[in-house]
Image (tube, rainbow, N blue to C red):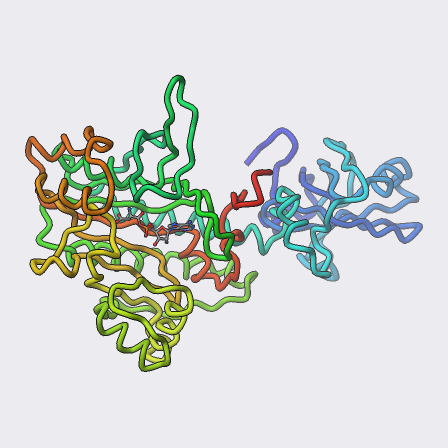
Length: 437
Ligand code: AMO
C-alpha cells in the first residue's frame, strides 16, 4: 500500500519494518507531554500506534506535536523502533510531521473517553461517534452481513436489481407514506420494492433481489423503528407455496449469521460471542403462537397482530427451547397486505414472519398471481384498483406463481449484536425528530 501520506497502517508494521523508515497517517487520539519527551497516540483505520518524540533531539517537531489539538489529522514519517514497553511492540521516532487538518477545540464529544456520552450528542456528532472502534465494528459487521447475503443469493440464481424509490401508489397500504412534490403531481417515497419486485416476476427474470430502502412515515418513535431503513428483498417465481420462500430465507440467515461469526476482532470489541445456529428454523403457526402466548397470560384474540410485548414473550419461549430464530406462519388473511395469497378457506394466508429473540426481523409470503383475485383483495383492503393499474397490468399477460420476503437489515443487526436501539445499526438514522446529520 502506498498512499501519498502513508506507506503503512498501524497493523501492518512488524519486524521487517524495525529500523526502517515508514510513513503513517491518521488522527491524533492523545498527546502526553512529559516535558522532555512526548508520546502521541495516532489512530488509523486499523488501530493505533505510538509516536515518540524527544525534545532534545527534535525541538521543533516536539513543539509542533504537543501544540496539536486532539483529533487533528497528521502524517508522520520516521524510523520504526522495536520497543517492548509499547503496546504494539514498536514506536515511531519522527523525522517529519505534516499537519493535514487542525481540529477545533473543545471536541463536541470524546473518542476514547470512557465516560458515558449522551445518545443525542453521539448522533448529533455521528462522524466523531463513528471514529470509536465499537461503533465502527457494527458497520464492519454490517458490511460482512450484506456481502454474505449477496453472495448467497447470487449463488442461488438471484440477480440484483434496483427499483424506483419515487412511486405513484402505496406498496404496503395507504398510511405511513411520505409525500413528494413531483412536478405537477404528488408522488410518494417507496415503503418497499414490493410492487416492482412482483412485476419483475412477469418478465422471466424469475429470481431477483434488492438491497432496498424503505421509507415509512410511521409516527411512533421507538427503539425498533426507523423512518428510513434498509432490507434484503427477494422475489422468486414458479414456487409451489410460501415454504419454498421460507427455505431461501432460513438458508440465507444461516449463511450471514456464520459470516458474522468470522468477524472475530469486531465481535471481541463488542464483547459478543455468537452461538451456533441450525437450520431448519422452528415453525409455529399463528394459532399455536396465540395459544402459547395466552398460556403466558396474554389476551390475544384471533385476528389480532402481535405487539412488541407478545413478540418479546414468544422470543423468551423460544429462547428456553434454545431457538434464536423461528417462523410464525399461517397468519389470518386480514392481518396481511392485499398481495398476500390466501389459503383455500380465505381465512388464513400463505404468509410468515421470521422472529429473532423477540423481534420480527423479516416477513414474506406467497403472492396472489391471479388477476381477478388480486383486484378483489385490493378492494377488500379498502384500496382503489385504479391506483394500481400499472402494477395490475403485469398480471394480465402471463404471471407465474411467486413469492418473496423482506428482511430488515438493521433489525437483524440489532438482534445479532444485542444492541438495544435500532439507530446504532444505521449510519445516519432518520426518525420522527432527526433529519440531520
Ligand atoms: P414488512 O413491512 O413486514 O414487509 O417489512 C419487512 C421487514 O422490514 C423491516 N422493517 C423495518 N425496520 C425498521 N424500521 C421500520 N420502520 C421497518 N419497517 C419494516 C422489518 C420487517 O420484518 N413487502 C413486505 C415484505 C415481503 O413480503 O416481501 C414488507 O415490506 O424487519
